[in-house]
Amino acid sequence: MNQTRDIALDDLMVPATVFANNRLTVGGLVRTSGYTGEQIPIELLFETTDGTMRRVATRTIASTGDGQQRTVQLEHVPTLPGEYKLTLRIPPREGEMVTTNNEPQHVHHGAAKEACACFTSRGASAPRWAVSAAPSTPRPT
Image 1 (cartoon, rainbow, N blue to C red):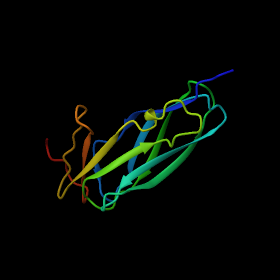
Image 2: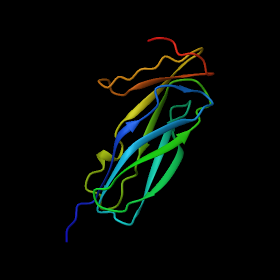
Image 3: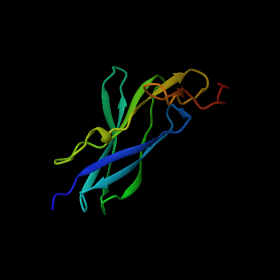
């Protein structure tokens, strides 16, 4: 039997407000086909101040059936305000038919010094979020 093998990561979920030194929870919807019974690793990458991407969280889920959809969440605590790229991804697996759907999109976190002004831009190359140095009342957009 020739079965299509694929893992897809859809529906990236990031909160609208994030402050430095507070937990950032990033989620996504994982869909598997052809990997029943296998462990699927998921990674959260966060851009460092020098521009390199660093893995800051990992999680492994068990694929229990073809077509299964499962929500996953990974967490990170950004320590410095600033604008950073963030990536949620599943490393490509041997025999996987399509790997371009393993990393749905990148997002950017942008810093404001006093307060957080947050927005999402679906039409741009990546949504952007503002990360403040300390929790305070969000500024109107």
